[in-house]
Image (cartoon, rainbow, N blue to C red; front, side, top):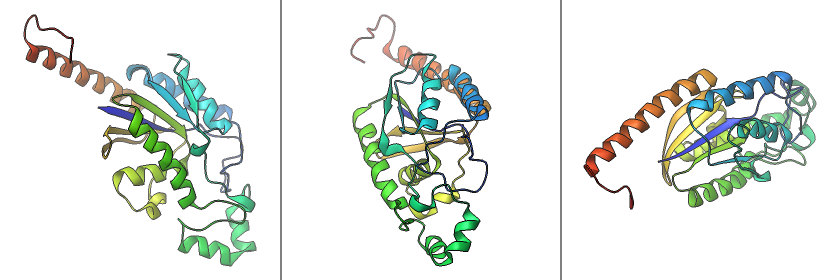
Length: 233
């Protein structure tokens, strides 16, 4: 069974208020680094990732580097995983945008998937590029354990896709910095095992999963019988 861990980067500098910060390439704050350090420790009981994919924005790349240290896991930097480009609205306060351009603000509320800020992307654009990456992961990574380190908007759209939810509902899904969604399964048949889980929940799941995996391996060995060869499984 394949496992894909969708990990949101740690908190970034200047990301504490209600501002549009999509493609803006903010570094992680000290608090954000601490969030990912705690998550990396929690993954100790989960086992190594076979690969880590990440957005090319620095807050995601740095998060991936921290998660990769323990097992020297290879990192693939993928620009298509970056957060939405909010164009002329990047860095602006939500209330300021609503006051300066109430018609555009209202249009975004009516069409959250299709609306584009001036010079920016729509969430439909983001969905197209993120799902192209997801197709590659589904096609080429067998029974692997993969981490995808990225951003709230992109991961919301991905979870909507694999669960068959309308993408317009993306903001019904919580996304906390330094938290994890876990998808288990295989192409076209996924289950959400963890949602917006912090380090404690990840560590607890890892201990339980390790026990279950050990029991499963024991059952398989018993089914083969004494002296059975392990080759050819």
